[in-house]
Length: 177
Image (cartoon, rainbow, N blue to C red):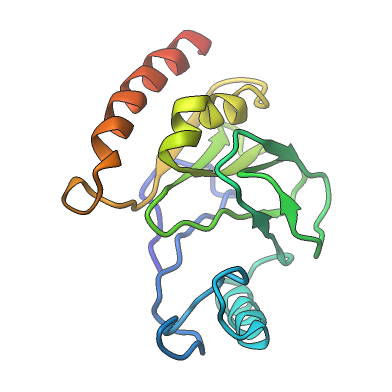
């Protein structure tokens, strides 16, 4: 598990899982959390339950059916329903936001008080079209952001485009603050 090194308030807990642990067999191997990739659904469910227990989550994560959109949903309570969006936002304590990524960028956002949080799945298209800005607009004040692991230039032709888009997004976010 990757624990973000950021100055989030103590009541905000965040992590990024890896393939280590879990029960999926090759080619999915280990901790596959995606129900959309062809892995055995019972095994995916077992992996999700294992992750929830290992990380001491206060509720089951809200799982997203991610479509490389710019949709960020507000969620006031835990749900077992998979929702169509690429980001989730809450201001309710105990609601666990999630975003799954493989080569896309996971973006975790929190306000300074730790009363509002968001998890965003940001692919190059979502970055270019404003997914991060859409998430930030839901916050009532200054935010902090953690950018998780993502594919690098060596493995993707779209990273150069993403880097340019990210520079534009950074300027836009500074204008909002």
